[in-house]
Image (cartoon, rainbow, N blue to C red):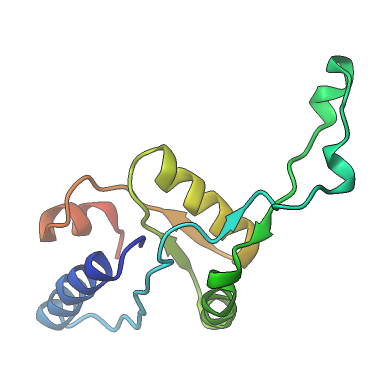
Amino acid sequence: VESPSKCSTISKILKNYVEESQLPHDYYVTSCMGHIRNLPKQKTERDEIVPAIKMPRYQATYSIIPESASLVKELQKWTQKASKVVFATDDDREGEAMAWHLLQVLEPDKFMRVRFTEITKTAILNSLTF
């Protein structure tokens, strides 16, 4: 989830659903607080001018945003403990980028990407499979 307020709302909805349904689910909902990686500010060896013919081989280099480093370490610890990681960033281009960067950095064994356009009980439960 991108923001702490969405995280809190989703946690409450899931907690109520799990308790009402008497499900044996153990989960942890947390926020990535926005983007965790960006293109580096300093040039890298990959930043040389590449002829157009070689462009298909180009791969961007990303670095962890310094302010996100401790959060990334915490997310990595949770990922190691998790049987599945669910990415629930916003359903837009920016949200997709955040989910992709999280997937690349966290490298979960099992994951799923859920999409919902509103933070309601119906939308959240319809996007998850219990």
